[in-house]
Length: 217
Ligand SMILES: C[S@@+](CC[C@H](N)C(=O)[O-])C[C@H]1O[C@@H](n2cnc3c(N)ncnc32)[C@H](O)[C@@H]1O
Image 1 (spheres, rainbow, N blue to C red):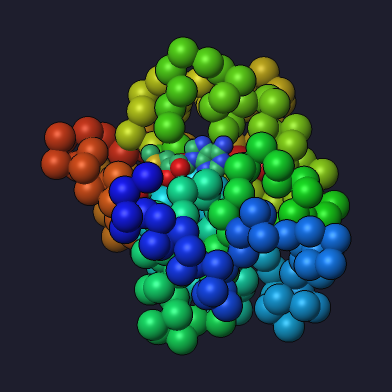
Image 2: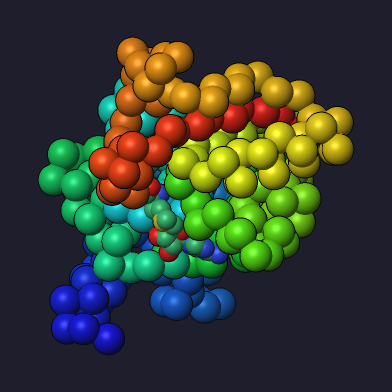
């Protein structure tokens, strides 16, 4: 592993706003079921950003909604490091980061502990539907953790992932709240949708259309 990546992986373990599944054991358990009481020390809703990369959405939404709590999730410590540093530098106490595989989300959150999920430019996984973060397999993982009426938001450049998710929504009988096929044509002033991540900027430079879906399970 290049030195900078190794260094950042080490550093995030010392950040007081970042959790790393690697450091947890029976004497240092996950805050599962206790995020409000032990981590945020308030009763505000908990919002997850999955595949958060450098955490632009956790930080951006955290500023827009100081009355909500945000947890950015990603397996890549060197990317999380950027978001965690950013939140620390701005003294944001409603934003945390967690380095872990999303596949194990139910080890870190209890039933009905989560109020909303954002999935921002996930890998489209064109060859394996089961690996898509909006596949029925993943929706079944999220479902028990979500409060009634919780929304799932997907922002993507991928026409294939957008179409796949629409088909899953239809097949599973889910409710669409918003369906935007070209954000910057249809709602360029929306403050939530205007947050731009590292990957979004790359896609925009290539002239790709950015899509958004919001739905409930
Ligand atoms: C294309 S990047 C997008 C990052 C960020 N959301 C952005 O827009 O810049 C996808 C991210 O998903 C993360 N990822 C993919 N599968 C994952 C999994 N199963 N568990 C945790 N993170 C995952 C990768 O580490 C990567 O940072």
